[in-house]
Length: 598
Ligand code: CO
Image (cartoon, rainbow, N blue to C red; front, side, top):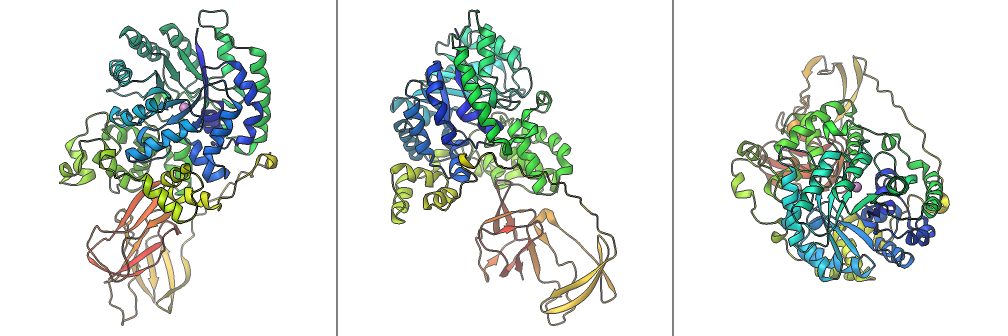
């Protein structure tokens, strides 16, 4: 007999409805879902925590306890990103422990724990904590394809996870690219190696071959398969629950679930699907076998597309697709899953936009320092030096990253209490994990994008923008230090001021844009002033300098968040900050003036 772990209330809507399913649209069907007799239901964790506070104005903790109340008979599971909890960076041990404690208290029975790099050191604290609070621990390994991710390596790591005290194991194929043979070989390998605890296969429909892989998994002795109600599946979603139940009927793998009941649930979610029509994306519904070639998960692909569009670089999509595997090799073949997918994805975009490793994100540096965990494969000394500089050996840590972190929970709780916003201890976690959006939520300043009674919303009309190339010469007025100049742009790199031609030099790779035309104003020190501009569209996170500060070449002037990654905008040379032109929290365009140095 095979059992199903249903993902409808977590991964399904994360995969095909942008994680936007509201609790009020889950509750009415809970009693029926509870009746099926699923092995477990995944209802929490992953991106749902973030989506609740950011877009839905819902308290994720309340969602969990509400679901527990309406699903009393089925074990409820959360997806826990090891030391990243439900976010994108590493937290200290005390935050992880508190989170798991309160998750269990609010109704989470099973914890599926994974680390993006499959670094088992990052999984030890959450595994031990979940065991201690009385939870069922499912130790997960991210499935990926690379020369180092062999069947033997997976079997070895699963054996270690069993030894670490896990109650079950999971092959987490987040990209939906596991082939029937690989699924069979890994599961059979585990069974042959004497692993006793149940094995679960989590996959997505993306490649189109997942049904075949599930069948081979059954033949290899898989115990649990992940699925979602068909109404919320599509290509980037999971294999449909009802179809698996029907396919395995009258075989030795028969789930024995009631198909009539499943059809009622399907009918309900068909209605939900129609209600959430404004979130339908054609791309999420189409099978894409190319994933077996480029190995980029669907979620990451759609992310890349929207980021490239925002950066006005949609036409470099193919180039970025080619760059991702190269970057991944340079990084020691990390699986592409949150947050490593983001680090690799953004660095790939940077490499295409500015030249290979001409601009390196802070997260890439952190990754090379070992602050995400140990990269799975070898990284060359040359790569380390390219990313971290000649003293790279002093920067790379040996230990697990959380060992360098100071406890945070008490501090966060006290801060929140001082603001008068601590209504329950869980709030300290919401705030600690998402300091900006969490605080906004707790203050009551988040507006829900929509509530269930407003659905369906009218789908916004698709906009097609026509990009016009400028027709030279362009003429106009430019105001510099209170004086107007009549300028003419002859072509894209020559500008005429007062009858004299000047070449425009834009040095984006260094984050600087030397004044393209020297001011004709004689009282100004000519050529001395340097304008530091934003290399891309983003939000100013921090400004570590003030006007009047002396800076050396390479010092950060501002930290820009672009594509969810932090980037230093640095001083191109030694000097003094004359003026800052942006404020913390400000959104800036590519080329926006950040600071003037003298
Ligand atoms: Co998934």
